[in-house]
Image (cartoon, rainbow, N blue to C red):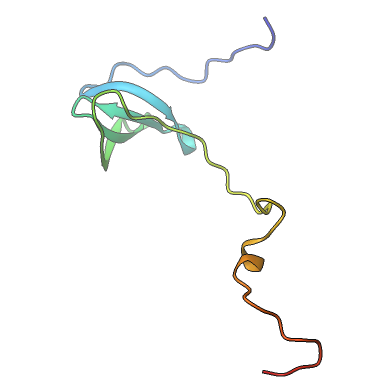
Length: 92
């Protein structure tokens, strides 16, 4: 087995929560409520914040998204919107 695990905190059961979905900033957790809504749980205050997103039973997923400035297919978004370029030395 490679690597090791470190227990950072323990969370007792949270009333009204179906399952854990993932972590957020500052140790907060995304959870699916028993009403199938996305909630954010702060373990330090034990507060649940309803995020107003509803899903069908057990279809909710959390995916990591990292913004990136690398152009897709070698072209930048700026270049995609250029219709034509004026010849060098020409004015509008």
